[in-house]
Image 1 (tube, rainbow, N blue to C red):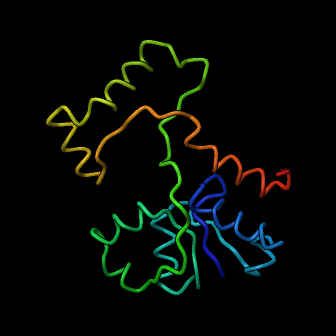
Image 2 (cartoon, one colour; image 1 turned 180 degrees about the vertical axis):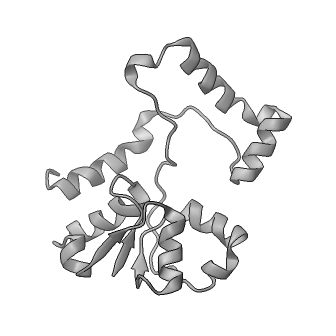
Length: 153
């Protein structure tokens, strides 16, 4: 059995599904049985407990768990890592992109590293900060969606 995080997750489903699609496979055919754990930490827990033989998990979550739950990480092994992909964005509906509340949230996130409380939150999250990036950062992920959907040309 293989544990996936979430069917809408890049690292917790799409990366593995893309690798399998490139090999002419689907997750259900290749693994025989799959489950969704509805959380990256739950994937690690499923593998560490023996519920699943393998799982797809976000590297950021895995590395944070190496610090916070090392006893679980010690019972797992990394079989393969994907290439680096864009870190999940904080997104909003296009219709509210220019609203004052959205702009305030964006500024608060980008400026977190300049504020003592913000730095404390970033340390807790094991992040350096937030930044505004070009949407092309996620082009590889969009291409993977197309491969899995069978529409890549």
